[in-house]
Length: 236
Image (tube, rainbow, N blue to C red; front, side, top):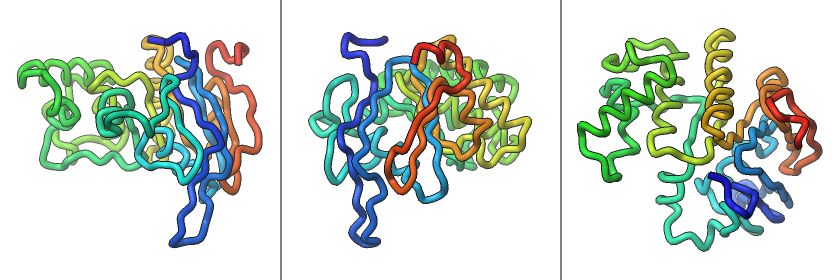
């Protein structure tokens, strides 16, 4: 999956200014994320963590500076929508599952614009639900799932189009400790077995320690980094 470029995502002097609040949410951030690397970004509330994640995933565009995917500026891609749907999986603190759809149907949502037939979509959704330990819950509505199960459905949905990078914003923020550990174990498996690049926003040292590398952001600026406990961490 990796390329000769070496970096799945990279930023050069990226800034994000919100004129309505007269605030710089991200200030002069330059970072590089290797293919297959598991990164955690930590910082206090309002530090710019989520804004930076949105810039990396093409959900927002920088006021200045450049975000690159596999060496190519996002600003030069023919379609940011296609980039987001095909290359990136998003996991949020709020699960954003449609309440009238079953787990199987929710997982299929990103596939609707793709080439798969309806039976093929359902089959793939069932495979993804099995991968997150929810094969037995495929026909259940979100209201009949625990909060931990809902987050796992959201992760399966994020994997629907086989993204190369997973961007997660406080993925355990609404979960109890046991459910949170199950989600983090799942991230470990995705990283180790699929070689998936993961960038996770968190305020928790315990959660961040699962990553290979931990970046700290404060007032929109990267202020330091350290090694996490993730596999192969000594290489970074």
